[in-house]
Length: 158
Ligand SMILES: CC(C)(COP(=O)(O)OP(=O)(O)OC[C@H]1O[C@@H](n2cnc3c(N)ncnc32)[C@H](O)[C@@H]1OP(=O)(O)O)[C@@H](O)C(=O)NCCC(=O)NCCS
Image: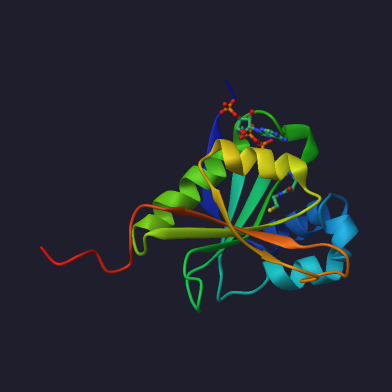
């Protein structure tokens, strides 16, 4: 089995690699994201940004937001095509959950309604559909809001 290592972004080349990966992959092609917009999202230092390396080669990326209304929001997750189906996406989500559940009991993710592959991936990992944002990024397509929870924000008093 290849060694998968999740680490924080270390250099501008990390964001550039992730932006190039996004710019040529679905769902971002259909969403019209493109390289420049991807790079802007990946360059946002108010987010936590991670890469997965497989045997020291960049294979996937993860961006988490720990601020705002949906604390614990996985904003971006992607695995380069050549590395899919080898556990890299799962390693990134496991990492995200460990990080987020340290501070808050919910993980939120949006997935495009046409992105059936990722919907299958998240369902397998225990994510539940909690809402639909119609025409949210582009007209004619929804973003499906998913949630995985380990309990309420304020547990009942003993
Ligand atoms: C979705 C994505 C992140 C999955 O990453 P991956 O590295 O290929 O997935 P993994 O190999 O870690 O798979 C983990 C589990 O999910 C399952 N899975 C992966 N892709 C799946 C799919 N298309 N349909 C159903 N299940 C799937 C695997 O079978 C595996 O299950 P197992 O643990 O029982 O074997 C990757 O396909 C990707 O980057 N897609 C394009 C970008 C994208 O859609 N990102 C999400 C935007 S919200």
